[in-house]
Image (cartoon, rainbow, N blue to C red; front, side):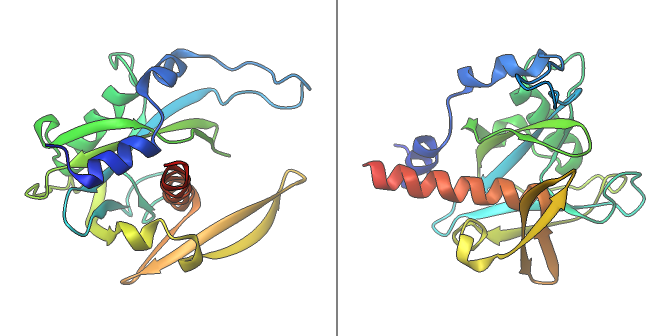
Length: 205
């Protein structure tokens, strides 16, 4: 029997067949000719521990990494040629970074894709993870693994929101402090997107 958490997440995510094909699309100009699709594609896993009080697994990137050192992030990375889909990318990266075996996770669907200023299109894959999972971080990429209660992590009211301007466009960046960690940037955006989707899914029932 599927858990209530499984049903709630499944109702909030987009089916896989709406995002897998996006993996191989190359950059194309938008109708106005002012922006292009990012040249690179990445996928991240949003691991939700299947507990009575669900938790989300996050990592702290190694300080020795050339990009975004020390930042809180989801397991994930750039697509490799051998990856068959964004799901494959997210699961492969999670296994490499925190030792999450494929048998421990049930991929459920996508959240909204995000385009970053570092020229990546990121596809978040939500996965329900067995609570008995014990992570084994790869110290070359991950300095720490920690969890945050899902109820807190997806609650817009718990975040601080600030406007900023990038290339003439005003946007909002959000941040959440949890046990000495600052969750912000694309990681915060993904969590808030999950929160919005869960809320909308409940309202539609």
